Image (cartoon, rainbow, N blue to C red; front, side):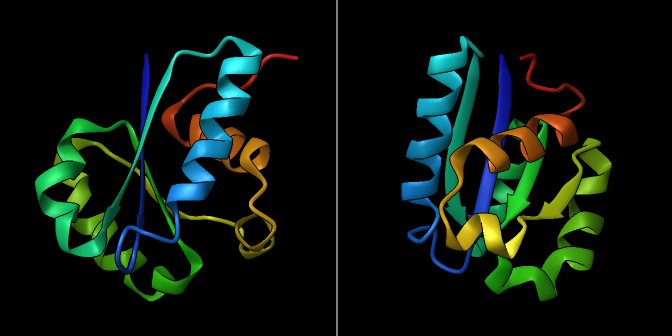
Length: 106
């Protein structure tokens, strides 16, 4: 099972996106655990995940968060603002899985 973490200012704005990503994963038969957290919870949670996707509103923290995630081997990337704004669960799931080292088949 893949484990993806979404991170934004308060952990709230990504919750709808998480639901859409989970719906796509279920439709495609992909075993994935996806959770949303605030930036304040980053250090406590990052070691439990294979990849972290940041909401565009916290993109300015990417370099620092990537540095803090590096001891765990967890890559950190910002979600494409268009996909985030459109709540495109499929694209963001694809981005997260690629970051975790796999891709959606078909």
